[in-house]
Length: 165
Image (tube, rainbow, N blue to C red):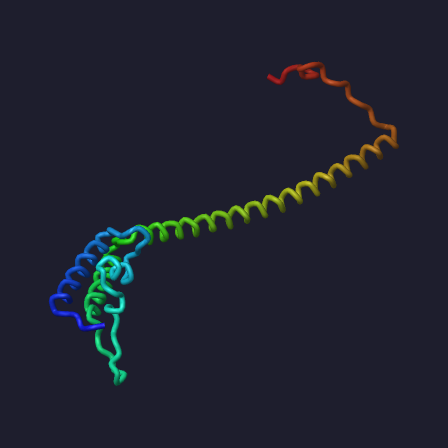
């Protein structure tokens, strides 16, 4: 690939800056993110121009648009530190992560409550069974002795010995 002319480089830099401004305003293309890949696609330049290059002797030199990539990252970091969310999908992901964490916490608490109630139910059923066995045994003992009298049944809806009021 041949070298790019100064006017071509200036045109590319203008396109990159325009795309950078759009992305940082939150005008993301469908399926795009606020990153260097989308910046390259939106500006029409190759992504490799944003990264350092190696010379034949092994030393590195800056890529033709590396300074713009660094500017983009600085501006993006400044916006994030200011509390602005440039990428609405990232904001939605963060919101959903927080919601999932809250729901997991609620489920864990509900599991604890269910375990406590299950334990209580088991103890209550055991206690009721023991009391029923005791009552049955006491009734059998009383029936065997034969010295128990039954009280007369209460008349429909009235107290047996008058009102307490």
